[in-house]
Image (cartoon, rainbow, N blue to C red; front, side, top):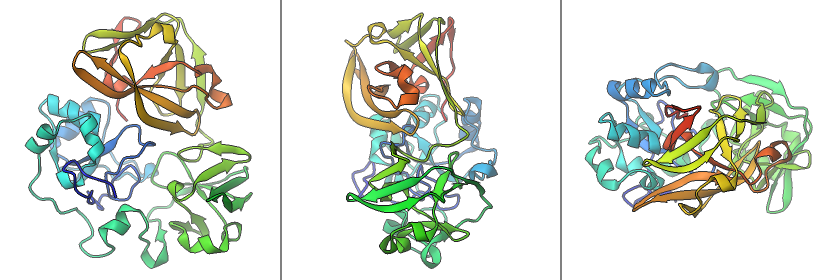
Length: 356
């Protein structure tokens, strides 16, 4: 059971609009949620303008991603670092403490969250229907399975896709469809005949007779014979890794933590440029290993590091792919930092925070 910042069970945040990194109405945050969308916040006009001015427009609808656009009064699972940034600027929205994941405390103090606590704690949306535990686990399905309320984009996936549970293959298909639902990347949908009979009724959604299963419902996913992490690879996403001679510097609390004139730049469709440093260019005397391990479908599995400046610990702020997937071998053993949480200087120019 996920815990909230008060130590109790995490309760839903909002079903209308449907929020959460996993789009299940809750601000649950796992290792694949690198942005830590853990704060259940009540939107205000002031905060929405603050977010827009800082590069994250939450007001404009994006129907292609199933995002309705937010208005004052809506509840939404915010990134913990964005809420903290707004708090320090005096623009933080109110917080539903019972619905705010405990992971938030890595970025925000409980005192600050309590100071912004909202009075009305009931989740917005469904007044009747499935119990909160079923919703939290994403296992509630009207009439057995959820059905889409918007027309999705569908494409043929040319790859063989398999999934296993407990060492047994339960999905094996060469007739897969990519379906873009409510995320920027696609989901796999399978013909029922390619799913083990005992798992067909466990599908979380269906579209035109095809079945969808949550990623976490399976132990392992494979495209052909290569394991895939976090979510399906988007066939329209490109990752370019290029050497550069641009001077790049990372500062935290005014201290230079990394500096180089030979960075490796990673360009990934739809995401900010990431700047990778060789280890000699990083002050490892300031870094402490973290327990958090993250994964990316295009790069593989990464170890994370925290940075300690004096008495201040900045948790899970850097990462290293020791053994990346073949297409990302150019960043093997190199260190990158979350631009959103550091002072990044490129070509002598301080870059503004860019939080997705």
